[in-house]
Length: 131
Image 1 (cartoon, rainbow, N blue to C red):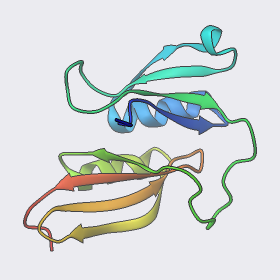
Image 2: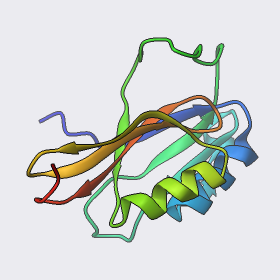
Image 3: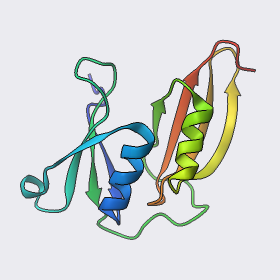
Image 4: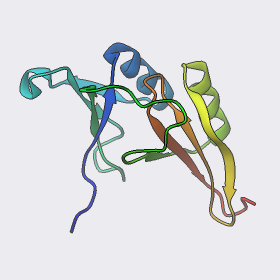
């Protein structure tokens, strides 16, 4: 079927990335480095049985993305209950705005950010009144 079942976020500073995603989204991490043969931490993003997928932070194997470069890969979007409070946490923990909060009319609020490692991700708050 081709359903997404896992993601990997490439990072230069593993501890900084773990701190960012742990503080902003409440993720926890499991050290799978021995299995992977490189710094690799499984990311638990929610409770078992909750809608969503888990993934990992892995040591970047090449140069980081250049600023203002077109996205070359997948951008993960994370569902949130309170857009503004999550955006505040992103900014307080070293993230930056890539594309500001905007309405998806009749559906949700959406925006994109850069994590401290330079990776793009989105946040999405459902709201049928968004306009």
